[in-house]
Image (cartoon, rainbow, N blue to C red; front, side, top):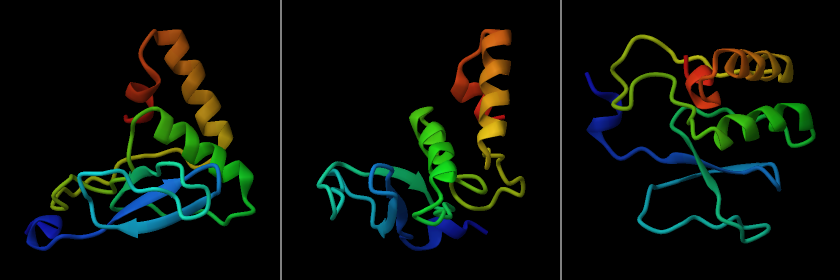
Length: 113
């Protein structure tokens, strides 16, 4: 059963500078941040925003989004059974960056495994 194909679910949009997240319907245009008016990044269906004062967790979110990945817990349609791994701590990001440099692969490839 396709969870995300049945009806239009809102996506999480994130402003890393302001450390805020909002749910919006996907649209053709950009979604500006209500606080700073910068375009917000799409974080996916299954993003869980850290607290605003948790700057370490927001640096991890920024690294994942800069690599071009989104927080999708399952397949895009929602029917896959394997949740995808995303790092939660800066130590995990650091270790994955070292692994990417050692193997010569892109950071997005290592973070997406």
